[in-house]
Image (spheres, helix red, strand yellow):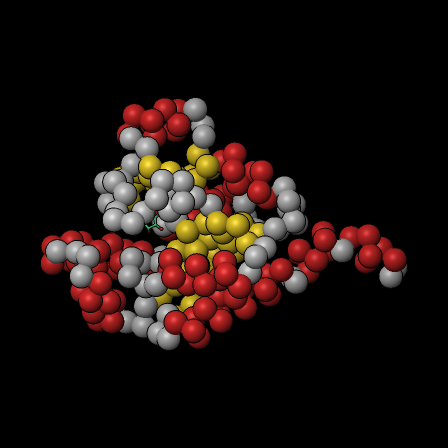
Length: 203
Ligand code: 5GP
């Protein structure tokens, strides 16, 4: 078993997942975020190697064939995947690892790491989600309808996760997320590895 936890955070687009994870990483220096590979084009302001590793389909397919991915999925017609080597290296240290992926990826990761901690970020309601997607002004109406349909699909898997955080007010949701990460760090499963020597003294 690893000393750190593996957190998998899933949410429909527009639920505020990226901002919540950014807020968590600011407060919790011991959490490392995996940077996924994707075949989708970078959006304005996105930087290769920071938001994603942007690759073309043939490179991605070569990586699949080489077994480079811990998990990968086709999301809205583009491939997304998590580097196996990166996760294995990071999990061997005493820090936590966090993946921001979709529900299909979360299922694949759970098969390999049954101890993973799954966290689902829910919007307060579907109407509120639609309002947030519209007010971002990033998407045309058809794209918003597509995102709403995939949000319903994503949300239908909410009960597969250990923790469910409702992002109604950002600060409250962030505090819930930080609490989950801190609680998992002091769980018996983790502490019995981290404190093995010290616990032995009490016998
Ligand atoms: P976006 O294109 O909006 O950045 O992400 C679209 C969806 O792909 C989101 O649900 C996001 O969580 C998911 N995603 C991002 N990286 C990965 C990954 O490495 N694996 C999987 N399975 N999904 C991912």
